[in-house]
Image 1 (spheres, rainbow, N blue to C red):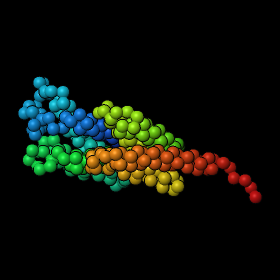
Image 2 (image 1 turned 60 degrees about the vertical axis):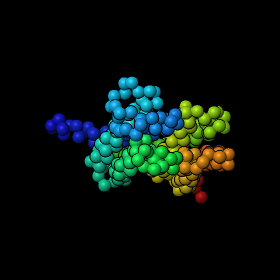
Image 3 (image 1 turned 60 degrees about the horizontal axis):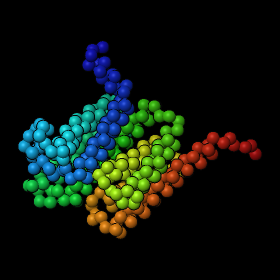
Image 4 (image 1 turned 180 degrees about the vertical axis):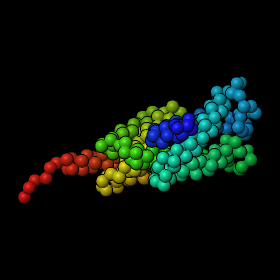
Amino acid sequence: MSTLGRGVAWLDDHAPGVAVFTTAVTFLLLLLGLYTAAIGAGATCNNTYPGCAGQLSPLGLTLPQFVEWFHRLVAMSVGFVIFGNALVLHHRFGRTKAAYAGWLALLVLPLQVVLGGTTVTFAGMVPGGYEPSVQSLHFYAALAIFTALVAATAWAYRQAGRLSANAVGTALRVAAGAFAVHLLFARDLLFTFTAEVQILYRFAGLLGFAALVAALCWSPPERVRRTAGAAVALYLVQTILSVGALLITRPVELASYAVGVAILLVALAATRAFERDANTSATPGTAD
């Protein structure tokens, strides 16, 4: 077998791992983008691209400019990873959900690039380019890509026969724990909502969201599927309330807290429902 053939065979064998890596670096990019926005670094490069402030090198940049420059570099690199992931999943799994989800992530990527450019590069040419509404759309596109990649990874593991027997239960428990942390770091609830606290808040929320999406992709029992699906829907509602699409007023803040509590309770209910179903399945029936 040629070197190329061995490389392709290795990628086929490790396709689920490639999907995990792609999802992980996209997750980190999401957090980096949120941090960039939180410290106000997005508008510091004077509408220049692909470099920052008229230069390609990071040398001599201020700290906010370097953060934005680094964000652009990572975003470009992750874009190529997403492209490669789609090719690997297609070659390994063919016309399956895993491959389709990989292609969906790649399909949304150009929109994400255009929205990102509008917010930080073309803002001087596009009226309202740096408005919260455009920044929110930029985040929603990133979330769509991340969701597709999580689904692709979950389906890849299932189709490769590499799921543990308790994968759904583990995912649901991770989701419940993550949403508990997510609630603790909610805006100005217990901690001042600094950039660092924002990242902890988003990290926990996105982790819980990803765990629920994975659990749903692994075909849990119907009652669990409905409950976990409700938790996903609630998280998306909270995202709309908290990413800047709406002016953060006290009523909006209180609504976000309430939805956060609801997400946690529903995630716990999904976990409990799964455990009850698992216990019922494991209990031998009695003869009449």
